[in-house]
Image (cartoon, rainbow, N blue to C red):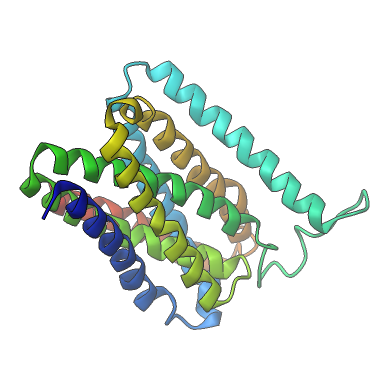
Length: 255
């Protein structure tokens, strides 16, 4: 099989496999459990940002100041995007769209943000898979397996965010599957233009980190504060730690 064929097959199968594995867990959760599991999603998102994406971005970048500036610009960009979504639902000055039905959904804001960031991340994963295969087929296979294994806990978090954001289970699966195709696109483009794309990887990773960080801190964590009781707070802290621990454990296992 040619190198391009290896890249196409592993990127396509790997992306869809990680989505399917995450869906088995996330989509079988009861509707009443989704707000609780959002705490786990926060931990998974923060773990992916600080233990995986940002270290790679700063390591690959020869200019950490520029990478940090990209993260800041990304956070501001997603703030503006969220404002645009709010304006779509609000046509008066005193808008309460962000407060309506807090226990059920947030009018799609966090779901849209997480899909933008996840698409960036999957695109970069495709580039990394292509780069590994172009160096050695065995290295490509190992890299693809590592990426799929690492994506699963993050995809679980993505599913939970989409459900929390008001999407149906079918829509959540469809959006995650569509986002996973960015891995195939990144791999194919990288095969033909790897040298050029390598310079953009740190910026793409920084934007992916910015979107996940924004969703976790600006959209999800404030909702957790609506339950200040000791029992609920301890439960939330435990699940956040579990989310971070899952990302950390997968990273340790892969290395």
